[in-house]
Image (cartoon, rainbow, N blue to C red; front, side, top):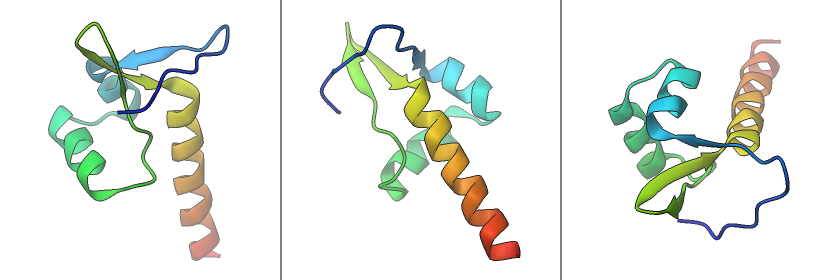
Length: 72
């Protein structure tokens, strides 16, 4: 888990919302946390795991850029 250094306006996603955003299941997220060190780490607030939405968006963009770059 990472330390909370929230900026004003920062949005956090619960695991169900993260799954909706990525169109994936919870098990995929848990597997990704184990296998991909670049995937944003959750923070814990009141026994809930929350993901920084901007960090998730940046991770997705980096994966898309990587895929597009390797396809060219």
